[in-house]
Each structure stands twice: as C-alpha cells, then as structure tokens.
Image (cartoon, rainbow, N blue to C red; front, top):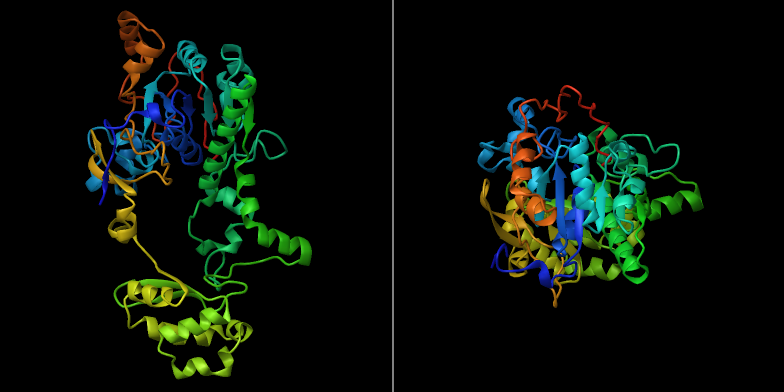
Length: 465
C-alpha cells in the first residue's frame, strides 16, 4: 500500500532531531538536500527567503523560477502539476518541491539592514546555519561565521562552496556539472564510442555533497552537546565525490593508467550490460562475475548450444568476446518481459534487474510494500505521491510531516512566535516588503532584484552547487 504523509498525524517531537533549529539559506540541490535530510530527521528547518531577491537556483532559474522567467521559459512547464504554472508558479515547480518537504519558509529583505538584523535574530535562536552559495557570498551579506558567532557563540555553520573556503580554486563559481568534470567523473561514464559531449547530466556530486554536509552537521551537533562549543564546517563539494571514484584513482596511482568510460561494461565482469526486452523501450541489466553465476545464467536460458562454445568457457574468455556474447544474450532477452528475465536469473543467483522508469517505480510492489511513496496534499499543487524518507527507524519513524513549504507561508509563526514581533511591527514589515508570499514586481528573469534608491547591489549570490 501507499502511505499518506503524516502532516498532522505525526509530531516532530519524537524524532531524532526534535528541538534542533536550522536556518536554511541554501540554493539549487546540494544544500537543499542537506537541509532536507535534517528536516526529515525532525529538525525545525526554516528557509530564509526574500520577496525582492531570488538567489540563482533557489526560487530563481534552476529550482524555483521567478515570475518573469516562468513566462519566458516554456521548458520549465514540465515541472508543474498538469503542466500549469498556476497563480503562484514558484510554489508549484517540482524541482523545488522535491526537497522542500518538512521545512518552513519565512521572508526578509536581507539585502537591507533591517532584514539582515531580523535574520541574525533568528540565528540567535537557532542551532545551525547552512548555506551553499559561492564562496564569499554570505560574508559580504554580513552572515559569515564570525558575524554569526557574535549573536550565537555556539552556532554550527555549514558552508558548502563548490571548491571549499580555501585554496586557489575557492573563488571559482560552479554548478554540479562543473564539479562532475573537475572530479573526473564525466570521463568515466557514457557510451564507449562517444565523447564527453554525449554524457548525460547526472549530478552525483550534488547528492554526495548534501549527504556529506548533513552527516558533518550531525557530528558537530554531537560535539557541541559534549563540549558546549559550536564550529564552522567547510564542505568542498567536489571533494565529496573523488573518494567514491577510488578504484580509478588507485589504478592511476599504482599503474599509471588513465581510465575512460566503459559504457555499461565492467573491468572484470562478463557478461555485464543492459539488454533489450519485449515491449517498447524495455531493458534489463545483467552482471556475471563468476563461473558459478555463468552456469546459473546458462541454466536460466535453457543451456543454449552457443553457451558451450570455448569462446565463453572462462571469465577471461567471456570478457574478450563480449560483443558476440552480448548479441546472443540480447536475442534471448528480446523475447521475454524484463521482470520475467529478472526472476529467472535471480533464481539462479545472477544479479539482474529491470531498467525502471517513473511509472515502474510508482507501481513497483517492493516500494509499495515498504510504503516508500507518501501521499502529500499541497495547498497549491494538489495531492500527489512524493518519494519518502529513505530510512526506517524503528523507534523514531520518519515521514513527510509537512508539504513542501510555500514562499513565506510561515512568516507569522517565525516573526510572532520566535522573534516576538508585535502585530504593529508585523504590519510595518509587510509594508516595507520584508514579509509576503509573492515576489515583488521588480524581480528580474534571473532572480536578481532591481536595486531601488539607496539599496545595496545584490552580491554574487550564485550557486556553488
């Protein structure tokens, strides 16, 4: 069965990070994924946003497009429910909502002194501050670690520039695709007969950096609980993926070889590939490492005569004759359903699985039984199934407790309950443009507010992700 989101049925009070408050000024994916993990664990994550300035990739170009961009970029409509932008399209874009569950949103014009002071007041009542902007961005705003320690001496600050906060590359601005290239990942994937221009946009570094940052934040929180001291965490996003390419790094270190893409093949497994199945665009992945697995695969295929050829007798023979081997296997899989192939091979101890698309994931019986997808009702998007929390804690089960936050929807709670702002002050902040649920008309297509009289120009607040 599919699970309904525990928007009202589960309190964060029982969760592992209950009572921890996080100020979130992240953009695009890596930083927002880090704070999503903290929110899923029960932390009160408050996104600080502005109705006058949408940082690149926040409610701007990449993740929550600004109104002008939404009108001019037809390609962005693929991210809306039913391909409809709606009255407030920045609240309906899937690229934002996928990581905004269990979070709160407040707005403040932090480009202005009063807005900056409001953010600092929130930091003073919080445990963590997380950001992944280009190096120097929050420092120019007045929200660097030294600034935050003045209002909260034991604050934990997580900063995630693409290349870290030190070294000759620290000022370089990068997105996920650039970090993939710098880490060497791009040349290791793709088709064997194609160059890197055919490489798909797989931003593994974003996910790796987000998970690493969340882990580091938890370690720092544990340290503070023992010592009473906060600290600054410098996460260089590119450095989080290089250790995951260890065999290629070691091969170069030990043997002087520079690896290139193997496509769907493997340095020591054969057969290893993706094979066509019955139906339109249906495929199955199969990998064989040992002779025992190979004999199991032959049994599943009915011990065809070609399998007894000396060309495929040993693992090395199979590896050297993969093109011919792949053709034989494809002839067999092409006549069968992908799931049938998987079951036949798995029964013989052979690693195999269908290549699933989104429809397969939603209907997959394994994911359904584990209640991975959760039904979420969003005030402006309607009711849809969302990928749920990827771990099962028996004592403190985690779920989607709150739909993706809409721009500024938690202003009243943050200002009045946390910051102690009076009704009169709240109304004044609304008139000044700090508080709202809509972008100011002056916002540009790339999410940069037009500076008004006396306003400081926007900093280089671009994604380091």
